[in-house]
Length: 253
Length: 256
Image (cartoon, rainbow over all chains, first blue to last red; front, side):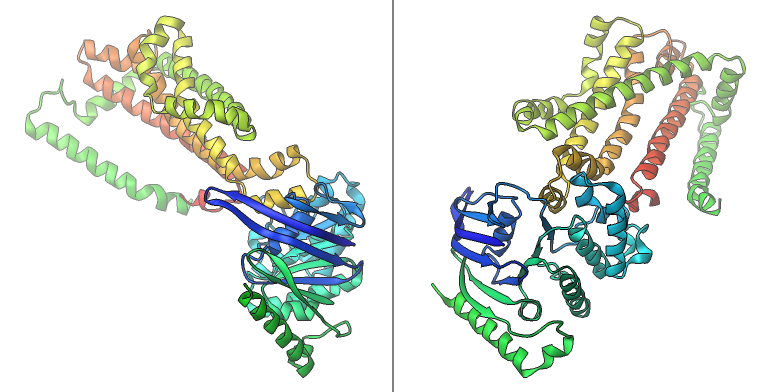
């Protein structure tokens, strides 16, 4: 569903050029949940932005469902680290943004948006403004928004990084539920080993300078996964493998 | 109501004390009344001016010039600001010049504008337009540029058109800054009007002050200054009220 073929990205700065990505090959099968994990500056967010069509690669090619990425694609839904809600729009209006931007029919979008808000537990907050919501609730609005136009691919850029630990776990379960209900292809950028191990089918570990995929770890657990899974020996072993892969990637020249 | 009392009560007390000191100082210091009239004389001038209706044409003239100049200047600033913020080309060719122009005290141009536009209302309006233009213009550009890049990226990734992003992200992001510019413009408009009237006019509160110097009617000068202050307060409060109404999501705005 998502393909990257020798993708390189070079930034021009005043102090010379920086290679953010140096030849990334990536394949995300339809309906799978894949995490990208790595230290800061390994280009994982850049890779996500490339798939979202927000940037063009310097070399190589990207494809979504076999079609080359040439710009933003309505089949993609995206969520950022910050909730990035518009303070001048109500919760419901915020959820409707992608549908509105794509000129989708109003009535069905509205119904679906209300349904999504119910799914993320915010049915009673449709007419509230974002500032009246907690950080976790705002991020839930962001999750509802990324689904409102019925995308096939979900791109997450550290969506839970700004939340406290408890809210983060709560939202992990929530996200799994949403994802299972809609079974879409997901690419999830994160700093958190626990998030990656809990949510993914595969975890891709990235190495910095230049950004590249260093290793891959399969996560075998069946779904739905519960938070209790995180206390199991098997989970600890997967998490340990991800950590060692990260250490190796950071140490690699 | 209670909040209003709490807000304007204490400064009113200060004002009353200041006026009392002024009255006593005039009485005991022996300063000539033609140099510093007592508060009562200023009040007389104010009441008298309204009673015989002689202030109204002046107030009307100043208000008319200011309002027209303010709205025309703001409209130009808004449209040019939007064009500049949305176009790299405009920015590269125009922005440095505009910034340089902003450093110039526009009132220095008053005599020149008078020569070009005549002694009527036009010359005052042009001066006010020039004075109101710059703060708003700069604020429009800064405001539009300050929009959250993540919000813009989110809309772009959702295939939003440029117009959608402008209308739903950039313009609301700039609203606070635009109203700040309008508020500065509202107070500057009065300065422009008064300077224009100083230079040459037959009407307006600025003219009233200038003409009062001829016959040393200091009380009238005070009265006109007080009227200008009231106009200034009304104008900035009106803009502030609109600000709170439109930019409802920035809570801090309402508190001041």
